[in-house]
Image 1 (spheres, rainbow, N blue to C red):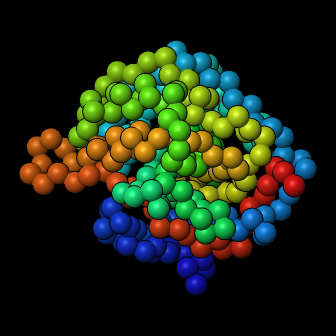
Image 2: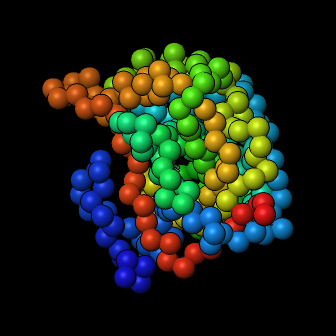
Length: 263
Ligand SMILES: CCCSc1c(F)c(F)c(S(=O)(=O)NC)c(F)c1F
Ligand SMILES: [Zn+2]
């Protein structure tokens, strides 16, 4: 099965085309969350986010998504609690989305896909000195995932949406400051699912403790349309490709348990 071989070649990636051989392969992401099979763990504490909006620096189109990057050279924006034993520094957030509202998220809940998914990425500052080290270590990263539904306009997101045309092409960067990622989290962050997984983009390393929020946020159709106006391609390339469907195919659970912080 895809879980046993030392090096598993996962399916063709919709964006990277070449088959991706990933290390180990028994804790890959994303996955479907089969709610009936999750296990309530009363030891799971509430998440504690302390984000300083002044650590927000820029938005960058890396050719897979747009990334909002934070200054992670000090402990000004930190995540702890939940399933985490250590303190994790905020380093960036980004999204995955579809060409239509029918799909776009990486994870699913009882096979239900959402139009988009937010990932807030943090690295373990108690065990490592740099993000680049943590990204290839077992307990290196903590990623908060939030599902997006299409509905009312998200006022906090609009500042980000207004900046996106400036990073339309792969490789473009624009200054972006004073943005608090907490405004993109649902009111209720006490209810989440958590499991051990991986990055869903190269290097696909099995370094991530995932915390997926049970509650979603709402954004408007027009706001999501601006995400879809971005391009995978740089300004120099003849053929421009819309940045849509930038999600990875789901991976085998391989016997992992998904725990819930709620009954
Ligand atoms: C060396 C990677 C650059 S940072 C990054 C990223 F850009 C990204 F897209 C994802 S993801 O796998 O797609 N979502 C959790 C990550 F986990 C990351 F850490
Ligand atoms: Zn992601």
